[in-house]
Image (cartoon, rainbow, N blue to C red; front, top):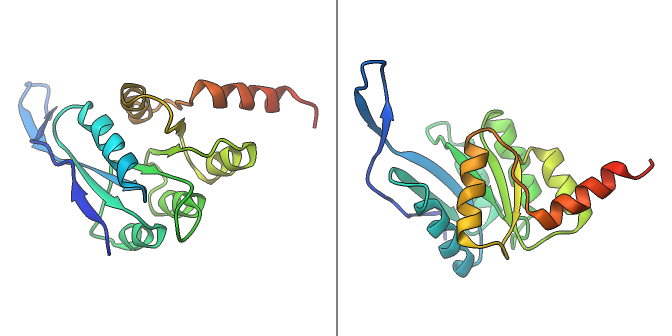
Length: 168
């Protein structure tokens, strides 16, 4: 079926010069999520960021990979589920990182298994939140990853701290 555009808002105002001239620029989000309910939840979280966001939603990893290979396509953010019907979201994260090493990538998933969390982080995810988090918590985490921070759901943070503190 292909990826769909959704969540288009009006333009985002950005400072373009010290003289406070405002410019318009649409920012693009690659959303890789097969569940329509969670697509809607994530779209709501993106809307909370303000105006100027366009979301391209893919239900399959292969569709996302095609977009990432397209030299004309560029993204300001990637939000990736790990449990996709055709491949692991970790593969999408790796491809996104290879395509654009500076792209903020965040996992939004129900999967909280240690191995999956670590694989996503090692592949290049800069944030990891669970779908059980509220839309507001998702929006806050998305904002944090865009600011260069590394947000993670509290339940996952506990796991990572335990892993980091455990002997090899």
